[in-house]
Length: 418
Image 1 (cartoon, rainbow, N blue to C red):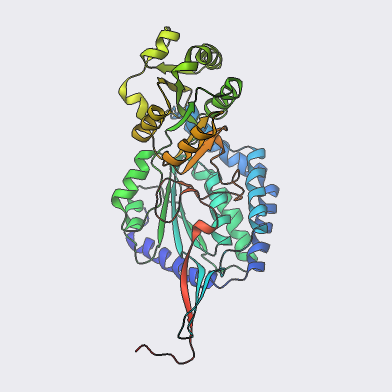
Image 2 (image 1 turned 180 degrees about the horizontal axis):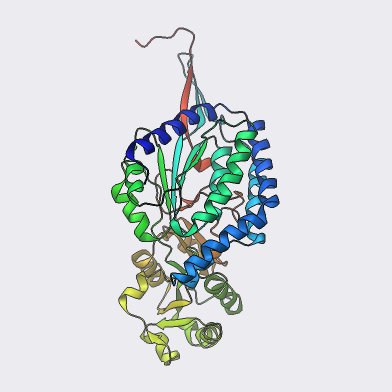
């Protein structure tokens, strides 16, 4: 296990590199990102082999299909990671952007300027693609990065990191701009989270238990989302065929992710017609339905939903279904049981659409489309550092701008305060 002194030494190196990285010009950063993209494509077969080692170990441990899905890397997935890096390289560099300019009556010129956050620590579990996405976003926004992945993805993470770090150093980025903790002992996380003088921000990516533990332990500011209990509400004026396709996509397209639908709410006026078809389609695709009393009157063969189901992020082929009297009951249900992540309404009524958008206080609120679009790439950010359900600093998919802070730069001509 790395000692506390080892951790401090590493953090000091990354902190020192962050000051140099903050001054790195855009051309250099973009050149590195393009080279990284090409390197991932070139070494894809090696990354897949290392990922297969992780998958074999995870299967021996009996980990869930949803977990294996998040862990798995294919050549196509690696190509997507490489594409994200090249897309990020084409984005405007946020560092140095003048957000606002003020000229005061006394002649002072005040500029509000974007700057990097500094050193960011990512603690994550079974998603090796996080390694590439976070490196790309942090380097473009001139943030130094410390990665601490889970043991189940260790071989995959190391393979991706070593390839990208080698490219970074060879192409002129400061050494230690990115670092990876290869020791998976959990005590190391506690030591990292106590390094508040050296690390500026923590972003945990993983299950709710990991995020709550990081939040409880950390002396460093944390941006987080605990879970994705996402809802779709089918209003009485909805195009029911559209609603069927949206709900099916939101649940089945990839059920093991945080933006998948976990609860479906249906207006009672369309419940019988809609649910008769919808439940059959779900059942034919292997989805277990847990319904309230009204839903079970329409489909008596489904399981009864209990109170805890409405709070649950299943991350699999299970869905809670409730019939509601109106849009007010749907919104009240979402605000009581939801996680402020992603929620959708399917409706043909503009007034109800506006009401839903105004009153549902989630990071992402949708009208007539699937919650599965809550994703950095889908939002045109190239990739994401995570999906924040916080209200301070960042909400929703976090891209380049969300990885910056700002400072005020003031120009004078000898003014003194009187």
